[in-house]
Length: 120
Image 1 (cartoon, one colour):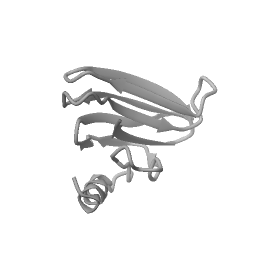
Image 2 (cartoon, one colour; image 1 turned 180 degrees about the vertical axis):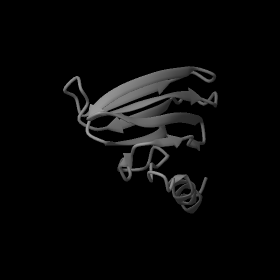
Image 3 (cartoon, helix red, strand yellow; image 1 turned 135 degrees about the vertical axis):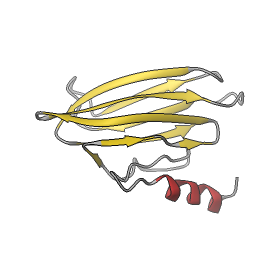
């Protein structure tokens, strides 16, 4: 896939409801923050994911799954950044080999989270 095609895929995956980005492994940032409520279903070569963003009181919950879609020796990941309730600031869900789906549910303080899909 050409660099321009990858960038087009990233731009197409930027969702207006929260501007959450589904980006290839070459992407350097987590993209704009998504706020509540929101629903996202990004895909990229070798992976797909879906998640929702909900606010409950002073907490934001991201709940979803990530799936590896190609037998290429790589894994699909969802990485999220926020002040999580366990004291961490980054979470990651990994799915591999092909056909594997990994579910995740993470809670953070506030009303926004940065998350993206990538394959590596």
